[in-house]
Length: 276
Image (cartoon, rainbow, N blue to C red; front, side, top):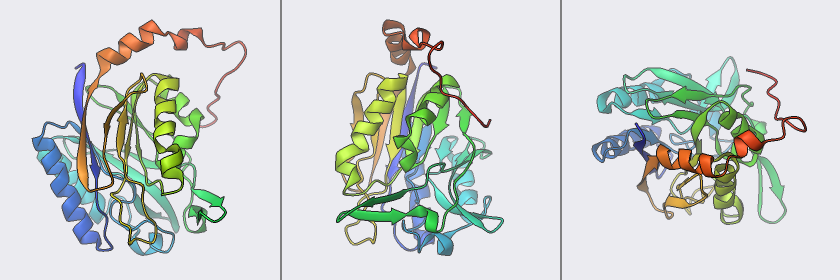
C-alpha cells in the first residue's frame, strides 16, 4: 500500500492518570473513525512531565495504561504508538514507548536512549537522569505500509539514531516528544526537517498540548515532515489530532531523484552499530 493515514494526538495531560487514559483512548477512537491506520500519542501521555512525577506514575509493562492501549488498538484495528509512559522494571525507571498492533499485540517496547539533561542558564535546567535510566536498544516495527523507527524527544538530536533506522529500511520515524518554550521555537521543526532530509524519510513528532500552568510547559506543535523537508501538517498549542496522508511513492521518487544512499562514501566513513 503506497499511502496510509497517520494521526498524532496532541493530548492535554493532567495530573489525573485515569482521565489521561480515558481521553487518550477516546482520541484514538476518533482518529480511527477519520481513517487513521497508525496513531501516535505524545511523550509522557499518562503523567505530568517531571522527575518528581516519574516515580509516582510509573507502571510495569504490561500494566494498566498499556493494557488500555492494547484494548483500544484491537477495538479500532489500528497501530497505536503509545507515546511514552514512566516504566518501572527491576527497580529502575525508564521513559518507554509501547507499540500495539491492530490485534492488540505488543509489537515493541522502546526505552528512550538519550536522557534529557540540559542546562541553558536563565532559561531551563532539567535532568531526567535524576530518576530515569537510559534504554540500550533500537526499536522498529513492521506494518503493511512500511517499517517504522522509534525515538523519544531528545533522541531526535542524535542524527546517528535516525541514520541507523534508515539503514534498517525505515521510511517513517516517529518521535513522541515534549520540547519546551526555550528549545521548541529554536530547534523543534529544524531537527525534524533535518532528520527527514538527511535520511529521505517521513518524520513525525507527537507533543502534549501546552499547559501554561504545568511545572514543565510543553511546546506543542506536533508535526509531520516529508522526505523533501516539507511540513505536511502541524498543530498549534491546543489539544487536537493532526492527520497526514503518508505517500511512500513520493518517498521512492525522492530517493531515485537524489540517490544519496548509493552515493555514500563507505570507503571513508560509516555509522557503526555496537549493539543489535
